[in-house]
Image (cartoon, rainbow, N blue to C red; front, side, top):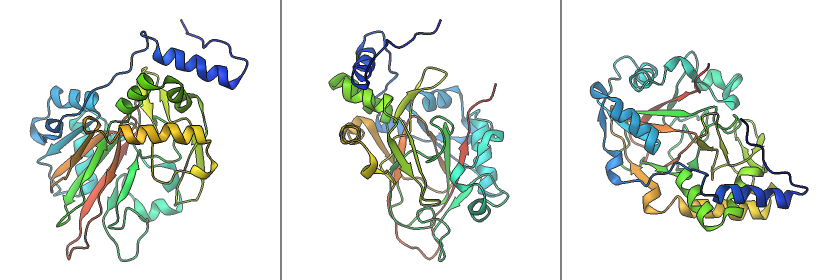
Length: 293
């Protein structure tokens, strides 16, 4: 049976309807507070159902003891298989398909993240910080549910990644101001643009997937704020405050042979800046698409 939304004769009343549904006791938002122990690494050779459950519950897991003897692309795929993510579902974000894909990916399904003298990408190939974001700027929400970051070589300092629990932040907004939370679900005016093609893609910030899980495309980088409604910007600012609460974020500084695996459709991440070393920092990124029935 399909639950139809109540009829509304105006956008304002529609937002009120959604706010009522969100704040209703029967609406369940799966949330969990973070603890520093969540960042404890799991050995690659000892990945069990417990590690897979941690990824499902918290939205991330750290894996250690990864071999890079056969290259970063293979290492990323092996981590995916160990966690039951199926590396055959690896995808390239839509903004990198075509000309830029040849430079960033070549024949691989992962891309390298390391400083270059002649950068192909303004952030992947640089040492500067990367702000809070969910990957897949132009891709439909939920189409890139997993990201795998494998560290081959960490910088001499800096370079840590912070994971942010945006789903929890949304649930906290629902508790305090369900109407503002509703704007993030029903308003399709959240614009994200990519420096790769200068295009803007619009849509809501949060939604529910086919498994009835809350998912998101929340980001603070490359957001088209000038073209967005002020009320929507205000709601986003509250999410930005909430994700920075201690129970909604964990900082992780990977070492060589470690990987950070995230639920890219439920948690956001960022990256600290780092110095230019004689032997530079080197990471590999693999994005995994959803299961296909």
